[in-house]
Length: 152
Picture (tube, rainbow, N blue to C red):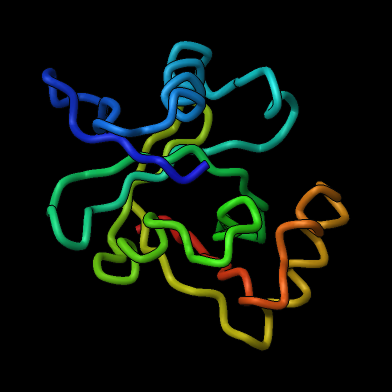
C-alpha cells in the first residue's frame, strides 16, 4: 500500500493520483464509504488513511496503511510490501511531518515522527504478533521504518 492520492475536485477528500494503484484507490473509497471499515485482504485489520504533503509537489497524498495502537499514538510501518526501498509516503512525511490521519469516522491533524531506534524492535515484534505476515516484510536490505502518529 504505497500509492497515493491528491485533492479531489471538491477539496474534501483526496482522489487518486495518475498511476495510483487500483488496490489503494479501492481501499480508500471503501474506507470512506464504510466509515473506516474495509474488506478483502485487509478485512479485520486496523486500517487508517494517512495524508502527507508531497516533498516535491507540495500536493496532499493519501495512502491506506495498517496501524498498531501504542498508547496515545498510532504506529504505521514503512514495509513497502518487503521492497528494498522506503515507500514514498515515508519520504514525504520526513520532509513534511504535519499529516492528516483518518481512523474510522475520525479525521484529525497529527505529527509524524520516526520511532526511536530503542523502541523499534519491540513495536515491530508486537506488529508481527498481531499480523504475522509482517515478518516477511523485513529484509536484510533495510530496516523497516516505523512512524509514530500523534494527534496535534
